[in-house]
Image (tube, rainbow, N blue to C red; front, side, top):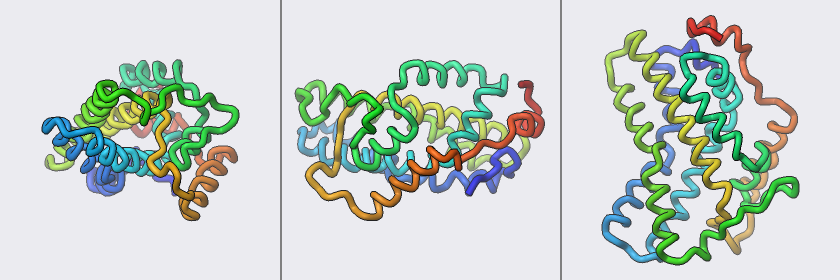
Length: 231
């Protein structure tokens, strides 16, 4: 179901954000930070990475449907020029298709039209593996989420609501950057396990929706008019 985030009130937007901001990715990240601070061994880090990656996939699933609408707003509104440059940088080096990214998250099996990831996470030397964990744990996505949470607690006003939505767009771009970063890594948290039927069904549905164009953005003229932005 598509939602017009442009027209949402502060309370409505906060409600819409809830399943995005409350993914267990963010709890896993806190545990990962603690493990790194304690200089925990690789086994402990690998166990938490499994949770972290599953949480990332959950976040990605929540952002699949509104992605086209969010990108339309970012690309066409002058207010978001700095974020436009970051999106362009992601797209300039992106190697996989939308359907391929969904397939990789759901089953870790890239489409035959997409290149295979170059780095096998489980084969990384200990030092390189720890650096990867530090990079993931300190991704800007998590600081962006904290800014959103802080703005949600502010007294509702037109200005605060605009700031909240702008903070979310920065969060969204951080997510796109993380998604692109992970393209080069092959990691299967369920390696050796049978693909669950419900996961396979969700994969097929998500890929079909992207291929059919079912997920659509709202007209950009309407977006710009409602936001009072130049385009």
